[in-house]
Image (cartoon, rainbow, N blue to C red; front, top):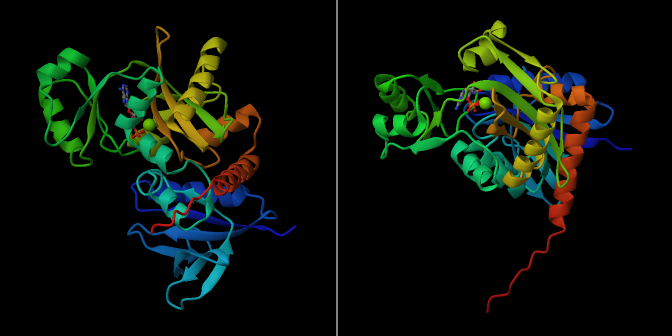
Length: 353
Ligand SMILES: Nc1ncnc2c1ncn2[C@@H]1O[C@H](COP(=O)(O)OP(=O)(O)O)[C@@H](O)[C@H]1O
Ligand SMILES: [Mg+2]
């Protein structure tokens, strides 16, 4: 059987560029090379696209994708030559320009199958305000919150009355805890709200939830499945950038989470409900708070979660019986299935006289 032509698209114009390199190195170590002919497409931090031989390669060919009668191809910009035709793209791009629907829109325009959520689910999950509105509409518990913009910064007194103290302040469209602050009083509130508004035009002000942080991996298109949930155990104030990526001792993870079986089951079914409410496909990691009195709230949904072999998403599947290389195969298959399904939809070209 001929190999599937796979383009792994990684790097990206995002604060999570480096995390993408880590995830991609893991995938390359574990992926079944008998099944795939892999093209490595690196998006530089300035947004330029290159074809490279290895994740860390210095030598690179400037490229772009192009749809043509031969299929979706990788085109060398300087020579104008088609280097290769690809069957499926696997974006390993975290955060903006990767998880927010923009690259998914590009893949659709380039007419190529791709792994993971489509445009709408990606952008809705990227925006924490939209996510919460959709989840609330589906009857799923979320932390109470308010929205601030440069034009509308709610008074501290009003916020304190509605949400209590402490508060969490976070940009609507970032990740990796960048611009996320815990505030205890009015001066911190004013200062951190101003700072968060330098990262995004929309900022969430949330009630601080005291409890465990639980994550659940979801996989599938029309019939998604949820993994055993896992837990992030923190030694720091909260799961900030430092404890996520810098200081490995500041947090640890455990799968399955230390919760009673009935709560684990509720989390699994809530994950699937949230995944479907958001219109997710392929994969997503659903993140929860579980309070000491048993309240289960969804915090956020990550459509391209960290994907190193020790990241929570693959770890949770490993614990549920799907190995890392198998997981990669399933994700690619789901991307191809969705592409095939969507291509069967009718396109009615109306003649306009
Ligand atoms: N309302 C909240 N209550 C308690 N902790 C919170 C709250 N919001 C965020 N946090 C803490 O901040 C971390 C990062 O916030 P999160 O909303 O997950 O944004 P990101 O997309 O950056 O991961 C969370 O993992 C959690 O530790
Ligand atoms: Mg998070």
